[in-house]
Length: 183
Image (cartoon, rainbow, N blue to C red; front, side, top):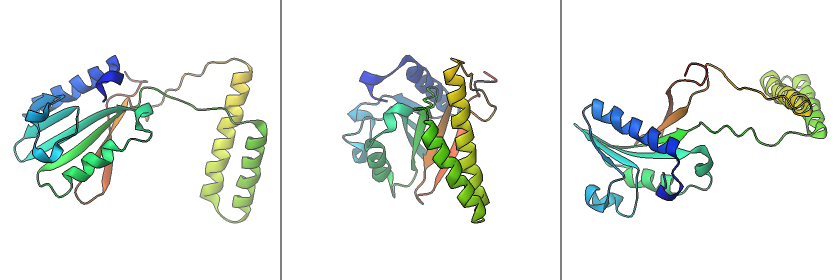
């Protein structure tokens, strides 16, 4: 979370994460200074460091829009690599839903043709996914033409997700928070 681009929502999310770690017995430093960090994190500006019994966590909070070309995250992960007792936690604030540009009718038609080819070739899952995307594109075009406003709500959509980077380089994605439908 870059302090110059920090939104109020990201500040609240960071405060919530800090509070959660404190409840679990960690000592928490929000936006720690150079004196609060070990030498191997010199030059980084993490949003939070939580120190617990046998484990320390470096936390970054990012809005989805901030993740493009984000090289700092990979550098922090690399700095923590092979550091026993340290892990990196990236919290992605998914509150801003960018549905992206609408597909045009020619793109949708091409997707439908490709879905048909995939189905005839026995690639049913790939065909279904492409058909699903084309159907969504048709519905969005239809709704946009009629100036309908869609409210996206689903029990599966969460306010934010946490990505844990572990020393074995595997990544576990854990969704935390409540969905907009239940909030």
